[in-house]
Length: 280
Image (cartoon, rainbow, N blue to C red):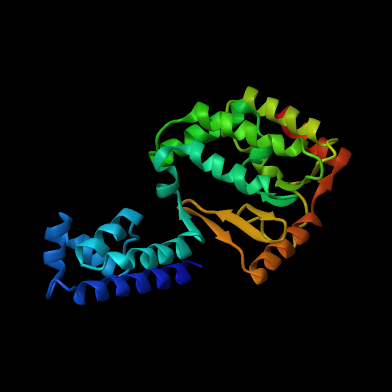
């Protein structure tokens, strides 16, 4: 996917270079355009060579300065096309975590069934406020993003209303290691375990825990969400990937089904959670 993203960015860069070279203002050099826009010349070079992702504002300024204001819609459509697949945390968190949670609420609201694999933290739909607060604070520090922790926690708790709507179903698999991760104080982790114990009986939640000692057909790998067999969202340290081609969605469901074979459910899942809680 990163290769496809880079190729799309390079194609956009070539189009930007074409617009500059065909400027009705006459021969417009990169240095001249940088002067007009009050940008470093290096930014012009990086954009034209696909080494930097422009913002929508960059594209508007470029189209206007090169004398092609009508090209903005085309440029913006190209940007939306590849950013819809790879959404960098730097851009998403520019205004803090609350807007990201609101985006997730919108995409979750439309779903009837979620198939989720969580390998490093407790799933957001089942987090307690204190656990969510600890996670947001750690990511804000990592990404150096605005600290809107309380707003983000409230937005995440509102997202959880999805669990209580008729016809919804969360099919959640969790790696036991996520329960052991000391991302919050022991008392917060203990309360989080209690919350998970209580969700085992919910009609809208099918919770499976993959024990640390379970035989695995696949490595645990990254967490991911499958929305109604139409969209997959997975994430890494730098970005989220939004993947909607049918072949990829099918692959992730196959991964989920394979991991499910190693999971414990019902009373067995509760025993795993209880064992983790006692260790705290």
